[in-house]
Structure formats: structure tokens, C-alpha cells
Length: 366
Image (tube, helix red, strand yellow):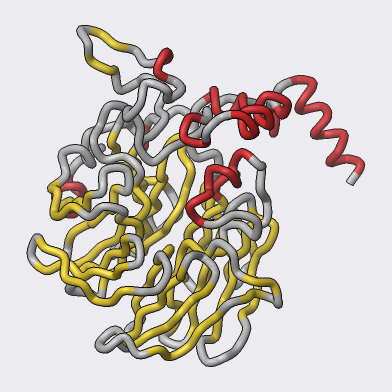
């Protein structure tokens, strides 16, 4: 403990380690492109958040509604009594829905019949369930982002320097769930993988793997804030980053007096903080940092919002990335998955469902 305290003091004194405000550059496999902006817009859906696939159809959540995509139109599947904050489909025709982050319900997809419900993890109430994944038809993985803030208040948790995120496993027939990981600096995204569990720790910009051989950090020092994870057909996985990091936000997080006063006095919409979309008001921060030439905002300007999906290969290495850069249309990617030979991505910032041909993406060196 003393060594940790001395290390933190040294970091703050020298501006390194945990006190550094540097942000990794996006180069190599992460080199920016326009893949998300050039993607096909399949359908619009205000409030789109999470996605699921039964192998043929894409399902999406928006507000209190669960929809199924048919052609280019949305078909209502079921309406819940509270906002849906995460969803997952099982192989036996069931759907798991997180409601307002405070409960998880399992229902039959065909008629909406209620089957089971979970409201706590290790005896503590759920507060911010934001990602679900069936490990088996009877076993569900989930992330509870924070025990202090609702899913819609993720930015509050970042500015509060929250570290109460949890990862859990629920035997659907049982009453309670088992905690797999605690004290996460916001947990958002989980996936069963090679006999273990992948899960994202958002404010630490990394992805963990708890497997048969123990714990490992699969990805670290990401340039964005990682969120939901989905399996890829080649044995790898897709990782969404709902926005990217900036040096200014990293600086604010280390200046406690300024950060606390900002939270107390400024409307959260105008905090110096990440966002799912931007450019809607002259009151937004970071506009002075925008680099414009001939009236055009340049893609290397500091991003308040951004769109990013990362493809990770079977060996755990980043292979490519899909971008919607500064000034792009499709920011705030909160979910992505493969379905029927294509990659679908939910842009919460624009309220659109995007589709990308996987064959074309694999042939693109990106």
C-alpha cells in the first residue's frame, strides 16, 4: 500500500504514469479512415443503443422498445415498462433485457412471456447494467457499470472518477448472481471467449480476459473509451469505442478543483467531457481547438465525439479499425455485431443503424 501511495505521488510530481495526460496516437492498424461514414445506412432509429442477432435478423433497443429489422423497416417486438439498457439473445429463443440498469429480465422472444428476473449481485442491488451476453442458454454474463450512477449518467461516473463497476455471471434458474470482477473503473462490455470472459474497463481504456489460466490484460492504453464486445466469425472479436480520448479531458480529470467546480456549476451538456454527438450548440467546449481550413473542420481536430469500431484477431492483436472522424456523421458507436455475413453498428450519436460488407472490409488494408 505504501509503495502504491509513493508511486502515485511520484507520478503526480513528474507528470508520468497515472498522472500523464498523453493520449495514444491512432496509427498502424488504427489508422483513421471513413469506413463508418461511408457505410450503408440501413435504417434510422432515435435512441438506438444495443444490438443483437439471432443469426438471421438484427434486433435493436431504443428507449423502452425492442425492435426487429425487416428489410429497411423496424418491427415492434415488445415494449417494456422501463428503458432497455442492454439486450442479448440465447440460442433457445429467449431474450435477456436490462431495464433501466436496475434489473435483468429473461423472456421468451416469441410471445414475451416472463421467465426469470435478477435484481442484485452478491446481495447488492444492480444499478447500471449496460451489457449482456449469454454464455450458455442457461447462463448469462453482464456488466454493471457503476453502483452509483444510472447508465445514462456514464459521463457523471467518469467525472466522479468512479471505480465501482462489476462483472457478473447469472445462472438464470438461480436467484442471485456471482461476481466475477469488482472495483472496475466503469465496466461496459462482456463476451464469453475461449472458456473465459472478456470484459472492458472503460475509464482505464483496457480490456481484461479472465480465463482458465488466470487473468490477463488483452488490450491496454486504447485511444478511445471501450464499451460493448461482440464475437467475430474468424475467432476474434469486435470492440466498440463510443468516443475517443483527448488530452484536454485527461487534463481536467487530473485537476480536481476545476473538475469539481465544473460539475457543480455547469450544465452537464457543456462539460469538458466526451459525448456521443457534438456540434449542436455554440456553448459546447472544444470548438476553439477545431482546425478549419476553407471553412472545413479537419479530421485531426480534437474530438468531442467520434465513431470507432476495432477488429481484434484470434491472437488478441488489433487488425483493423472503422472510423467516423471529427466532422463525420456517425459518432457514438455503442454496439456492433456480425449478422448474416455483414457487420452492423449502432450509431447512438446519429440514431442510425449502419451496415458494412465484411468481404470488402477484409480486403481493405485499413
